[in-house]
Image 1 (cartoon, one colour):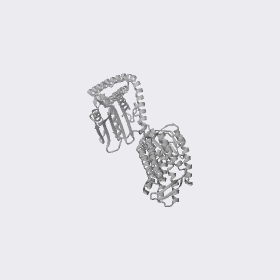
Image 2: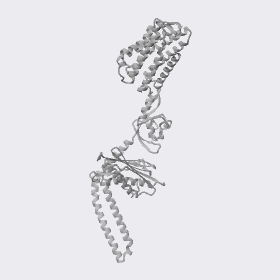
Image 3: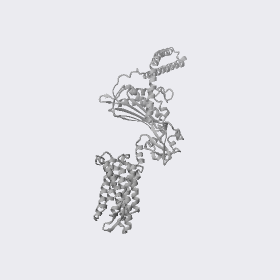
Image 4: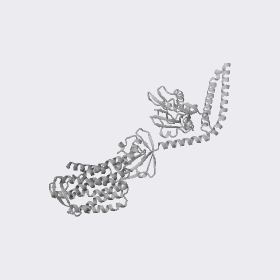
Length: 591
């Protein structure tokens, strides 16, 4: 018997402590914890009652024991109201009355013999209390709330499971009801007939506590503290959340913020936010609208983000810090960049048709005249050589031929640029689209580009031969060649024994993917936004026209695809081309 009482008290205390530790702010948890603590107090009094031999001590223990079992019914009803989301039910109006009556009866129980007048002589089963004139009132205070719950929630208590709170309320109700019946039989009815019985009420109530804990664990109600629940929610968000102190020191952050800065979020605690966001204002109050900044990651790359205005976080009415939501803007920036490039190319296309027509005619005529002049100059060179007069004017004649060749080369370049500019026009026709293996196009482009690569450039190729696209082969081959040549040029200035260039073709669903990556010099972040602009180039004068990537972007878009570029200075550049894949005899989403 002593062991049963110790176990009942220990289990009840442990469960109550667990509930209060996990979430002491939830009212239902506090009520259930109070219920369990009352049961623990009752079991503790019974434990000492079984051991004492002094009748006076037994009377005191009996009177104090009423403090354990009298509140159980009221706490059961109060908890059921909160668990069933009906704290404003009309029956809740009588709860304060019950608490007041309970307080009065408790004082009378301890300081008078109106509830417990004494104890009968000790027998083999222990002490049996003798009840005073107000005992029925004390018993009613415990049993009446249980009866009220049975009447008010009779459908709920016998209905099918709806959710965890309803099941929890039923467990508490039926557990208290069974315990009430058991306690009434063993402590009131049977002793009245001089029949001694083992009291199991506190053990039953501790078992009810275990069922409550199991239900909470099963349905997830109340067993997770608001702090832990908030942490779980914050760590699943894609947006970074960071708590900063007044001095800009990170006090807490979620996993998304750690991914943004490239450091475990726990390692960021205690460090200044300016370690990753150098432009972060010193005064947090200066934020009144979302602000666009950049995060400097541990890898050295920069991540565009938008930071929300601060939200003050208080703890015990004192300012604990400011909460900021940090959103990754890479996707938005990429879309803005694509829209800007599309707008620029559209503007160039609107102008290119008339410009191309205006330049093409005089350029073609100039080219014809230069070719005739070259032929005449060559004829003059042959005549001078035949007459033996070449030595007198050899230098001038050869210089003239060289100048003519340069002029012809220049006009060819002008004609090529005019044709490339003309391709931006909406009226420009690519020709017929036919079915091609993407791997074959890439292989051909690699062979062309490899001629410009230095011996120390290692080109790694991984191609899936089963991926097919509908395309204009020569145009798509030109795109791949442009990208490869740019990558090879980026490797030229690297002072290393071996440089790497990887080319891969794969697929994801209905999209064909081409990935080209180098470990070259990379592209500055302020330049990356302009690489698709017509006539923009970072190459030396005379080496590039600035139309390669612009034309490539235009061609890929015409094929219904997308082209993306990411780069880190001194680390390399990655270019991803996405095209509609030919599936089931047709190309998906071809523009």
